[in-house]
Image (cartoon, rainbow, N blue to C red; front, side, top):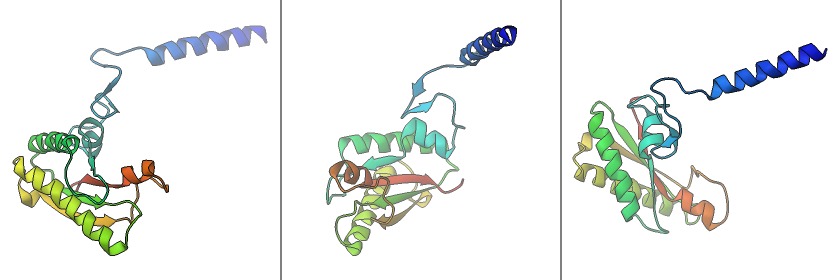
Length: 161
């Protein structure tokens, strides 16, 4: 039994080392917005999400784009220019506070603000549709500012995939 245990230990060590070894042309670490470099197929929804950023956030009761939101949308516009065959929908979302009607209207203003910015960066308006989900599709469940701030957003979603 001792020989079996030693063999198993050696095999496990070799296996772990092989799993950690880089192959030529591979890189380790993170890139973009948190994805593994090269993990997402170029031009895919995962590429947009991981390497560019697919969402921007808003202040309470606002559809004004912050400097950070504008920077993300600039990156999205550059990405969309790389992939001219890709069309997107910009989804507007709100936190749980407010009436359904108010949040649907605010979500629409948020989606429209993101679309307007993308168009100002040279993306054809025909490539971008908008929809508001109001407070119906929260990204984070919770009754505090940490959750609410993640739910006040506009998300760019690929239509072609």
